[in-house]
Amino acid sequence: MSQNILSNIPNYNVNYGQNYGYKAQQTNGQTFSAAPVSSSGIIENNPILKQAAKAKENDGGGFFSNFLITLAGMFGLNEFLNRNLQGEYDKTVLKKMENGIDKIANRPNMQKGINFLSNKKSQLKNWLETKELYQTLINKQSLGGSVVESQAAGVRGHLASRAVDAIKKYVDYQTKAGNANSAEVQRFKVLLGRVEKESYKHLDEIAKTIKNSGAQLDLPLTKKPWWGLGIIKNKVNLREILNKYNLVNNYKNVAQPVIKNGARVLQKPSIGQRAVGTFMRTAECITNGMFGGKGLVLLQSVFIAMALQEARKAEKGEKTGSFFGALFEQMSYIGAIGLQMRVVNALAGLKFIGWDKSKHSAYQAAMKAVNDAAKSGNSAAYNAAKNTLQTIKNTALNGKKLTFFQKMLKGLGNIFSFGRLNETIRPLKGVKASWIPWALKTGLGYVGRGAFVFMVVIPVIASIAKNIGYAIFGKPTKTIAREKAKEEAEKLAAQQEQQNIQQTQTQQPAATQQQTSQPAQQPAQQAVQQPQQSAKPGNLLDKMKQNQANPVASQTLQPIASTTIKKTPEEDAGIKRSYVPNAYLGTENPVNPASSRSAQIDEVLRRADIAEARARALGA
Image 1 (cartoon, helix red, strand yellow):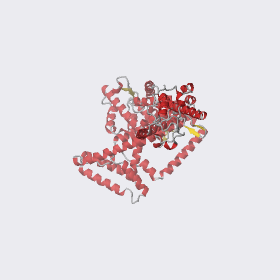
Image 2 (cartoon, rainbow, N blue to C red; image 1 turned 180 degrees about the vertical axis):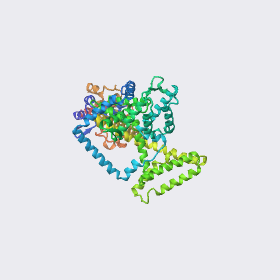
Image 3 (cartoon, rainbow, N blue to C red; image 1 turned 135 degrees about the horizontal axis):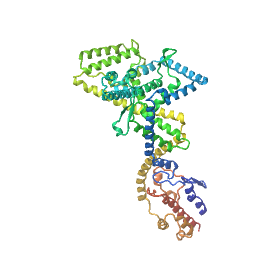
Image 4 (cartoon, rainbow, N blue to C red; image 1 turned 60 degrees about the vertical axis):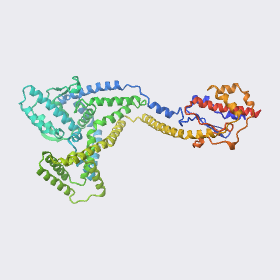
């Protein structure tokens, strides 16, 4: 029996150094748990939990140095791109890039592939043009306020804003030089008075005026923004505006007039022109110097520094994909602002589903007339415009009936267009009582749309941008799996901690009741246990080997009858063990939550020591 009991004691010294937990061992048909579970219910040294703890550790820093290096590099790139476009375009590096790409694209095999894709694109577009939903989303969008529409204009809006700023600098320079009455200055002043408030609508007019003004296109115009502390300079000239205007048209694939065989014709941009235009659009997202100045370079440097941190923490061989995936995702927050606004405009425009395009245009004009009259306080014009607006609404469908699906889309459009400034009738100037409902309606509408953009639109666009980066530079599968494991481990730790709290609350009352109702043990048994409890932790196994002739072992001990064994607090709490409780030890008090691993191991060995002593006594 002695040999049998000893064979059932798991070898902790071996398992502890080799495993993250303890494997269950089975001997003589009985399974003994070799996993010391604390009262918290969390298995210590679990590799998943270790990984979760490691995820919370500091990654070693380096962010600030990455930020400074990135900031310096972006300012350098900013200067290079803008200075390069302030001279003759045909002499720039970008023109050489166009020629090189066109040379490759004009190869026969490349032409076949380009023509095939172009035909498929045309077929898809022609098919979509027949769909009412597509027509509504693309051609019947709702209009927001001037700020929203300026952002929705995207790259053209950014360039128009920069062009107005450059024209202002030119007028100021010539005025200080005594040329305030020159023809080009007077022409620019008239232009500014007409387009400054809504410049995003007038980019074509601005570019045409600059080109035909006779102004000094190469005149350097410099301004020191207040945030630059006198160090950073914003340099521009009018030739830069015209060069960027051509690049924007190339990016947008807008046909431009060219002289061909002595005749003036409209021609679509070449593959090289479109590629360089797209490159500059991407560079504008990174530097914000192409169209929008240098202010956001600081914020974008933070984004790039964060992407570098992601790359540094990535698995070997996946650093490039991790960097560009993170960079594309973070840059989309700013680079895709125009797209975000257009998504909202398109969804709000669903209220026009089923309308003719002409009715949509007439509605927008009538709504503008109503609000202009409201601002001026002209009640007659105000009421007339409202009547016109109502007539357009009543006849918009031309007698057609919407399907159930179209009615659902129209309802969705009404929700997204709720409270839009350009499509909500303003109260007539001077009528105070009607201002409160209008203010509440517009305020709630913009708060709701802002929440939708931040919670739905931005995450979707960021996810798409990240996957584009992965598609080009490789998806860091190992790194993603590791991060996913960290998240799951953190969730597991939180769940186990919650279970631990509930289990402790359940065990404490049961343990108190068990201790008060448990009968006093025999004096001989107390004599056996007392010396062992006072033993020094960690030495119990050595004492068992050295003191095999234990004087206490000669005492006659009777095992506790199985009928008198009561359920342990763990059993009362619904905890199942993988081993059979020792009948000689009786019921077991709950383990102290503050006990350490060594104390738990000593507890197991203490019981083994007592069992061995009793076995020797019975064998004698």
